[in-house]
Length: 392
Ligand code: FDA
Image (cartoon, helix red, strand yellow):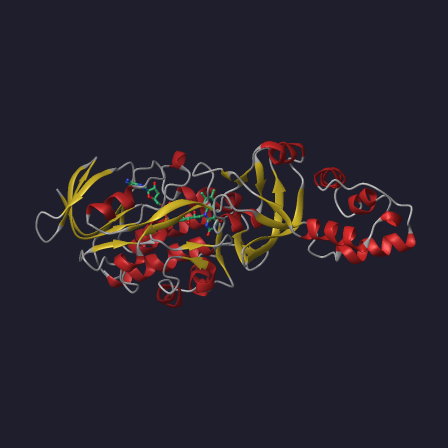
């Protein structure tokens, strides 16, 4: 039977980081993953270039029932620490936008770096190894795996969330948490495209492929980034961001022209060109197909000369605050992350050990800490993995 100090279940971003740190401290550490290849989500992330961190990372970029939980780990292993590791391996990188750092070449550079670090730290990676159960028959952990039983002094659950199940994502971490009596904050897909029904769905279909710069808000939360129309609804960074905040049955608000004072522009046009149709004045502000759809959506008719200030104000409000109610999201099939997870109240924010189950740790996405889009989720994986690895 394999006996070791630490078994990390899940060979993704958080699991690797944790195992590397534990190995560096001389502990025997094995990483188990049921997939054929390690860190599949790193491989596909950032369009294959991995948005591995964000220069502006701070606790404000995370959602959790306890927004303070992430502070300690993020402070002890920062975006600059990870960047230093990337530079040690001479991996070429660039800032794309808003502090988002990507590999110039390929996300595989990051995976190779982690594999190398794990090897140097003496850690072992066992792929195609599934874990069926974890028990504590004595003061150690016993894991029933597809390679037979294994024993360890400490177990780290780094199995992520259930988004993209076809890549091997599971809710295994939540099952283990519940089995040991730990509460799990209800989960749902996040950083995910929003879907629509009826007329708005048809409109999105007709506009599929059109993208604009927009400011999307829900309540007091707003994001200004790209918005993309798709065959099923809306996507693009601004929509993915707001999806983490959106509540079912409620509308989102889309400012389609965040840089344009639409009322001023329309009243100026009314003075200089009173015979112009309102729809023409509006259409000019947008790509042609989108302009046509908006004139239909807002029922824009008549000449500017005949428009009162009230009508122009209403039109401006529609364009700067278009209210749309999604029917849902595209779900775990395409979601980049999972909101909710193991309740942070059950864990130490220093060691990520379950307060009531000594030796059992949870790190990364499986925990109820979810980052905004832009490299924040990997930074959480690195930081939480690093903290747990140092505390084992
Ligand atoms: P992660 O999911 O990475 O790893 C979990 C591992 O556990 C997997 O290897 C899985 O096979 C294994 N596993 C699961 N169940 C198991 C079981 N029962 N037994 C054994 N092994 C098991 N974030 C970011 O910051 N920048 C980005 O560019 C992107 N891009 C991006 C694109 C796409 C398409 C997705 C889906 C996600 C992103 N993300 C992202 C989010 C990011 O990928 C995610 O937050 C981290 O991978 C989470 O890291 P973890 O190590 O916690 O889980």
